Image (cartoon, rainbow, N blue to C red):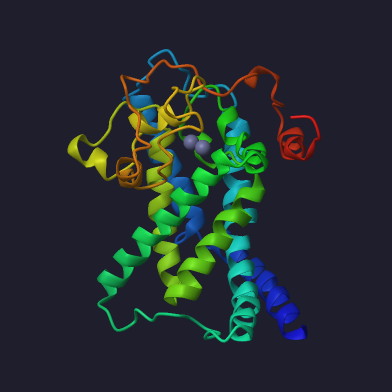
Length: 293
Ligand SMILES: [Zn+2]
Ligand SMILES: [Zn+2]
């Protein structure tokens, strides 16, 4: 128990040092803080140069709320949870597995494969796990309470990407950890590259730009597809929603949850009664815990 506790505490102190280092040395090697700001600025400029909804303001409704979410979720509940959870649950999970007679560290080791191949395998599985969790967030009523926050966006723009309840981070990271780290002996260095790529594609998915990468749309998620994910009116054939893709769109095509019937440029976004959903950060964080939904 003490070992677990120490791992947990060391993860936090280590993370605090890391966080301070990234902010105080913005141009030292690859730096998440700089990356998030650069990607956000680049996609924001794209929205200004090539706006899909021409009458949407550059500083749209809830822009600053979403900008806050971007830093809050990215730092506090994304990297931090990832670090603490993967270190601590690595030990805890390992103990549980050895208790039932399985190896305590990992099931399969990909380290004999070429680095690029390892990365591709990790990335495909990473994205599929996220697609599956996203599906559950829509299909399980208890989880939907939390995920509603992401769907409360009424005017779409890049910063909406990271508007979500912090509980979602726990779910995603736990699932990713169990599948990637335990089953496949995932290397943390790859997580940084995958996460950086996912941030860029995720920003673009929510951006006010009207493109879909042509034939690549069947592989890569894109703004013209993801806008339908936020549609207020759901079609009869998809009562729990559609287009659950995070970075890759291919899962939706494989599992028939794809839906892009026409240009979604001006569709209404949200869910039933979205106008009554809280509009400030604290109220939004508390909302899923309220009894009446
Ligand atoms: Zn969703
Ligand atoms: Zn979204």
